[in-house]
Length: 232
Image (tube, rainbow, N blue to C red; front, side, top):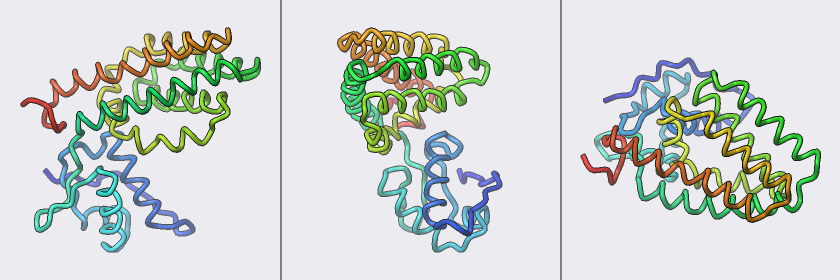
């Protein structure tokens, strides 16, 4: 199917057009607005962004390098399906990185940092009615704050490309998230950090992140046409 570009989109003339277009299309693919397997029309994308087709063509090439779209000669450009192998590999890398972040945070975090993290927990609990997508934003902020607490603020930026396929799964399952359960998991991480319990913080973050693998198996069984490597 051809995916309609029905959301009004503004490209700022004062910023690089190509970077804005790539970032916006990447976000829409990751959050599921452009679903796996959808065909992207170069002409429709150009019209939606009020651009010529050249920057759209260049954006498709960049997104293909990130394995978010597939350019099929003489056939068109398609949003890549989610590769189950990529998800499991990226989950492994992210868990390893964040386990070290949690350990470092438990050593370095001061009272002000712990207070910030606990404040985020309150916001998460008080805004469960936002739904899964709203929670994802708060979850991202929480994990970024852990990296800052570990005095590794740039690490969060470095792992963004690695976790894109995981994030696609998270958005597909967003409305089915047991949000209160995730807040409890976050709380265990924070309390271990507050107690300067490195082993406890690592164990809590590993348990939290491994839930993604449970999610991907469930959603792949429900929507096998969205995945590579899923049985039909």
